[in-house]
Length: 86
Image (cartoon, rainbow, N blue to C red; front, side, top):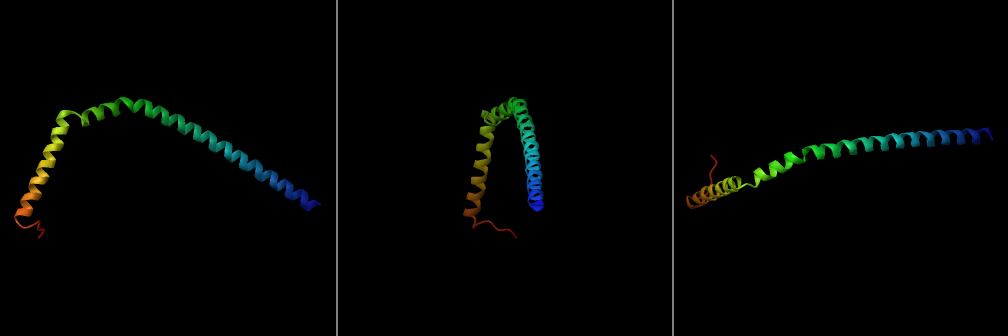
């Protein structure tokens, strides 16, 4: 019987440790979730500003210019016999 009692005590200790670690993990999760929500709330104006800038007409024109330039270079390279990296 003493071995059975010791086993029961060990199981109780293990269960208590698991509960303690679980509670600690849940608290940490809540802290991180709160911090994430706060950062998301604070960064929202900057994200909108970046979206507006990247979708502005001048940015779209820049993207179109880059694309046309790449197509022109590749077309010229194909006309001249391909790209050579010597």
